[in-house]
Figure 1 (tube, rainbow, N blue to C red):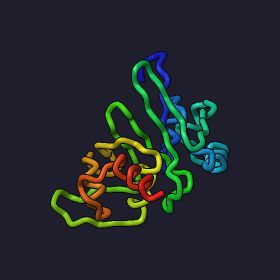
Figure 2: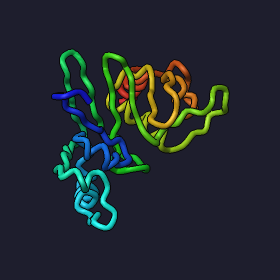
Figure 3: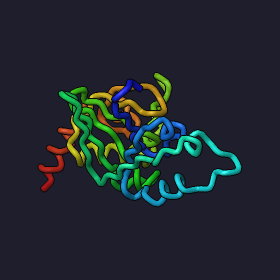
Figure 4: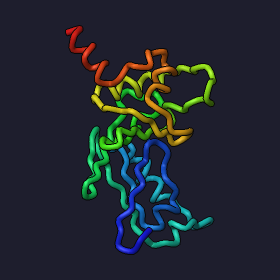
Length: 176
């Protein structure tokens, strides 16, 4: 961290380290995670104090709803709630519109190059959320795994490689 800069940890699902919070990072998380963070930061740690306990800092937790935007000059970072996630009711994903990049955790982990697709309901739910939000995703940066093109997610759920979020929206409108 540079002096005078504001840092934040956006929790996509797992809680960030108490160590990160001890260093002054703010936590941005879905409002449904409120009770968890209340417990995490008020738990008695006198027997084995960690860095956060010794820091004497008050935690900075910012609760967000279904949509939150962070701007820094010309950069825009959108934080979206992943509705209907069976992995975590408070799951968040991050979208960078200029880069057309989606950052997500736990719901899509690309296999090794050339591996057969391994569809799962978490990945299908992520796809449905991208369509619902009409995000123009071209690349995905999973927290667990390598960055891949959007077509890798499509392959994993059995969709055609040229299926884009905009195409899905057009199909949905045509069905009305």
